[in-house]
Length: 123
Image 1 (tube, rainbow, N blue to C red):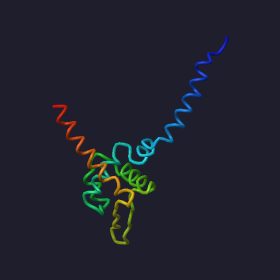
Image 2 (image 1 turned 45 degrees about the horizontal axis):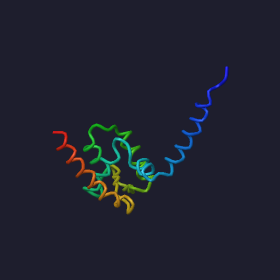
Image 3 (image 1 turned 45 degrees about the vertical axis):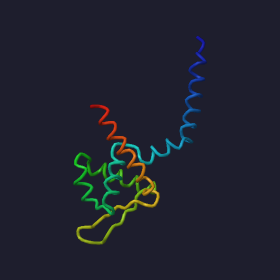
Image 4 (image 1 turned 180 degrees about the vertical axis):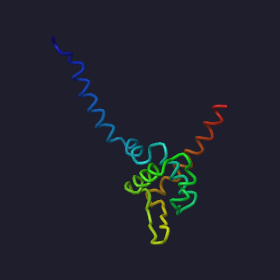
């Protein structure tokens, strides 16, 4: 039985779309700040900078400590946050926005304004 070439061409097309998406600046932005918690964490840190890990843990009641740590590490790895550890007992860990992270502030402001408009629209 002969294979359908449509599926073969579709695979090539999907691969080309993947490469195109990787070049898309929106894809890069979403990889850095996308997800359920990252923007909420960044919003909290921008409002009170530096922000201690314990304060973030208290504010983000529905995030597990493991997920919180992972999200903060990813933001640090991507150059959006810096992490400072102070040799105290118990250890104090603070997070700050980097210069790159500070460039997200007007974007977060715009998202908050849009969120307000969206909430009003839903009513």
